[in-house]
Length: 327
Ligand code: NDP
Image (cartoon, rainbow, N blue to C red):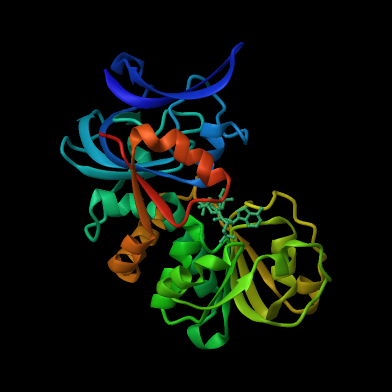
């Protein structure tokens, strides 16, 4: 038996609880992992609270990422004792995930724990931080350099936003943080933000084109915010869009794209191929300041994950939440 969060949906409704689970129920997979740390991402919040249609098979162990140690392997690429990390691939959605003491997964989904990090640090980064790196890499590949101009990060206090600010600042960019919690300005400046704007400036329907304000942007919010961000990007700038915290809609016009040559990059972390993942983790090892990572991180035990998921959905959680699955 092992301890895990289990989500059920039946005639008595949708509910998540912390339970003892029989190992015999672990899903198919070549590699069994003893999990050390998991984390809480926005998608886990949607899954645990049932506020979004994330879970597509029941019962489901949520948790879209984990770091742990291989305890059994039928995949020659992985040996017992190997330290591994997993993000995405539908884990915690259609395949049992990381908010538990054990997981069984496909060997090809795993990446080695980067040498730069402990398992706890890897989960402090988690899917949110790895997605932030994918966004930063998209802007870099576009040719946006620290001297190109200001970079906007929306959803600044969230997991993706916090790590994006820390990464961009470390790389020498000037970062403008958009947040609904201006009371957290000091925290955002500690991470490396140079200026803070109120997210209300961006969240209502806006004009097709606005003043050219930012060379690039990382958007975790979607909806009108993403439309207004695109309208405020400088000539030939770019936006890396990864999130939908405001909404999944995109009520924009083509004006920024056809009149200012703005590029909109879509960022997906879930199905990203292995070389992309490994490069992103390697870059995180080089470019994320461990002290800033610790400042972003809040630790909870597995038994607190359900309550914290509710707080995450209410926008009351700052930065990243790591989950000690063994307490
Ligand atoms: P968090 O919950 O940690 O952060 C989301 C932040 O968005 C909040 O802290 C808040 O920041 C802001 N926000 C919340 N509600 C609203 C709203 N109604 N309008 C505007 N801003 C809002 O989530 P994550 O950082 O983990 O994820 C951010 C987004 O990125 C999510 O939509 C998630 O699904 C997506 N994502 C996508 C991935 C991909 O592969 N494409 C991978 C990982 C995440 P503040 O208080 O500062 O305003």
